Length: 343
Image (cartoon, rainbow, N blue to C red; front, side, top):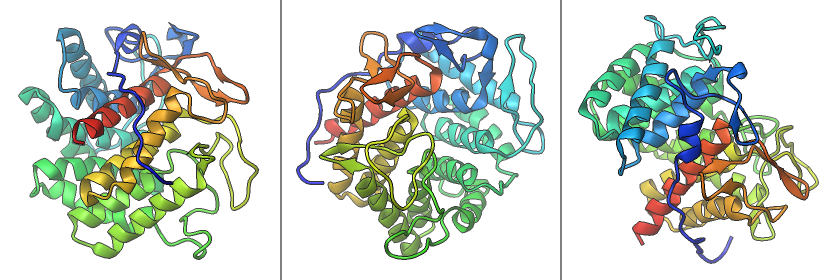
């Protein structure tokens, strides 16, 4: 990657997110731009939305209400022992048992960001209480622990003595990123899977907060590996739904917006911690992917509504506009706008 570039600014637009949300929570799926209530709600999306709304500095009353609604949804999912449910049907009934899957990690992430970032003192207090409950648990899954580590790291920026976050981050560091097979494949798994950049982001945060330079270095190495592996002809060509191994033909589809957003988050974190402009390039590439600098040269969101399209396909895009994809666009737009403002 050479030459720092930033695509034209697009401020986050929340119209589609508002349309996807009812009095209970955020619908997971859409058919084109229409919500599909029959598919219900999930904590994964509510936690992502809580991150985005908590760090949105300018909010009208509708967006403040959304932030509170997503927080309430996440808190309702967390049980007294810290485990977390994920799925609720359209009638408001939880359909799964509490556990520590990815949704638990995302709940911890969302609560950590809200507790440290929200402009509402009440939300910060309630989110911190929820974080402390959820942080009692640990997950055997490295993605879940990576998501939780990111939330703990955000909280520790504002509350450096928060014991629940320190203990969780220390344990996350031991689970998330064991060394790979060697210099040619340093990745801690035999294949790239999903939200891959959350793994190095967790290590970067843990290395910085816990003052462990080797851990920070490993996280930066893995993030650089991801960027190199997922950049083609000057644009991102990210891991598709099926994953990627040591060798693959490029480009491959169905590429997911969540993969691009995870890269944007990790690069923004790496830039904040190191100040190295190399990571600004990665963030710029992520935003440019949404604007159409991708393998199919197609814009991946609707700038009028803020809706994100559900996948990049060969020669086109999935026209459905679900919650995950929309939040990926909004999150990346926030980060790109913030990076641009600091230059």
